[in-house]
Image 1 (spheres, helix red, strand yellow):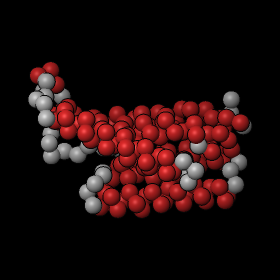
Image 2 (image 1 turned 135 degrees about the horizontal axis):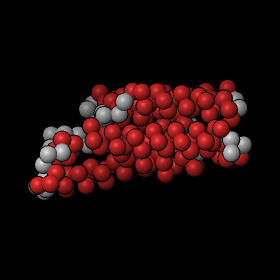
Image 3 (image 1 turned 120 degrees about the vertical axis):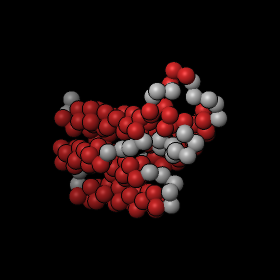
Image 4 (image 1 turned 60 degrees about the horizontal axis):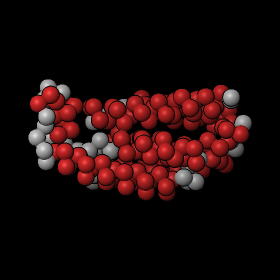
Length: 170
């Protein structure tokens, strides 16, 4: 098994799981996590011998999502951590899987929003009253931890990406 595949099998899924859990519990996704994803992509790209053209296309996909996502952030529709996570993930996916990622994570985020709105319509269970994260998640004026949808979609689509296929065949 190649080192790049080990990195992908370890770093990317761990980072996505951590992003989802962090967003659920604290409604934040750290800059450090997103920068780690960018650094891990650079290592994988180098180890897999991606051409400069391929790397440029991946960078363009990440930058495109960063610009669009920060527009959504400026409008108050998503959080800043969500915008950075989506851009870092787009860097890994490139344009090849970008539309499926954006469409599926949008649908997943919509379903997550509906679920949370239904949960907020019910009283918070007594056993969860002392859990700060549960109170925050239940509060009507709080946002939705959209990073959960971004992370699960990324994990679902990762095996379909060109970089994954290159790592598996290396």
